[in-house]
Image (cartoon, rainbow, N blue to C red):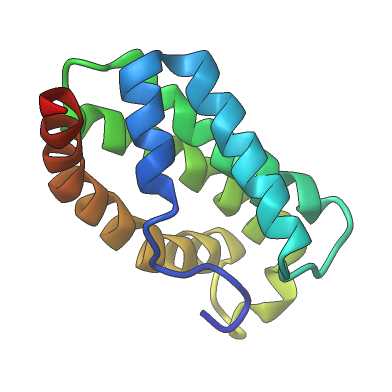
Length: 137
């Protein structure tokens, strides 16, 4: 995406860990993933965005571990929690990028859902295979 955000599989291992080990390890892994992304070339437009778009957003994926018995619910809850952090960042820091006449909240919601929703769907489709494979080893 032009201002950051992409469809990737980086949420998949975090969601797997949250399902397998629980919320705390899932959040910890997400925070670590966000920090690694910062080191490897993050798109920073505002200093406070560093927290919202990286360690907090990815850490919130671990909240999906509250529902380890439902892979779809794990992905939806974790992905939605991540969306909240990116959505807030979009409203606070990226409002100047919204097209004229477009509400800032709508711009942020559409921008972020355009890559987070497909990532949630892909994660929900792949996570059962990973869990099955890991449990058979």
